[in-house]
Length: 198
Image 1 (cartoon, rainbow, N blue to C red):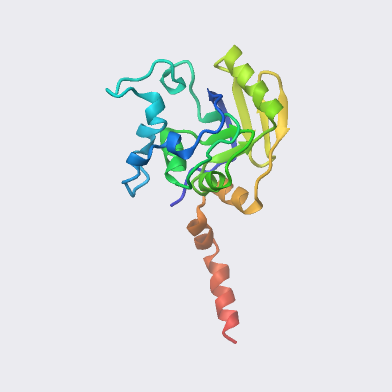
Image 2: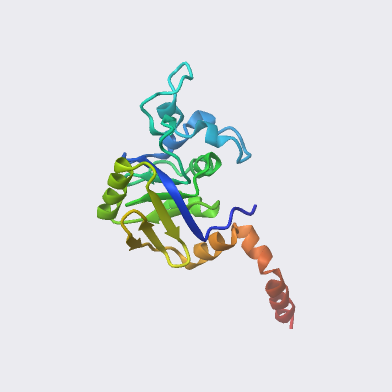
């Protein structure tokens, strides 16, 4: 299944300055029964967003209309805990295309890139600057440039580089998952197979 191509994203951001956000907090286990990837965004951070009677918790950031955008900024060690890929599905389905943190759990990071979410790992110092900028102005924008592998705080012009695997970068830039990548190479694969016969 192809996803949105990711090249340059300029957007406001939603701040979640909480460390050690685990996958059960991102999408509670009771919502993992579905096999299709749609609908998980409705239950993103479900227990943090809603009371037991399904009324929104006023103090949770996703229920605060002043914060919007396609970028989620989380605290250190984002996506820890179990390996459920549904956590990435929920973030994508909600509308986020990029998650920024100073550290990601490896499995969550890979699950995210597999479905079109770019995890941008920055220094603790730069992450703090981002949080402070959003706190001062919820309309502050970030620019995430995948080709140059940089993230820029547009209000100050401050920028930092981030790392990404070349294969994952190629797939995100083209909107590919692993199967799309192979499909895109089918001519080369067929030629190699023909050549290998002899």
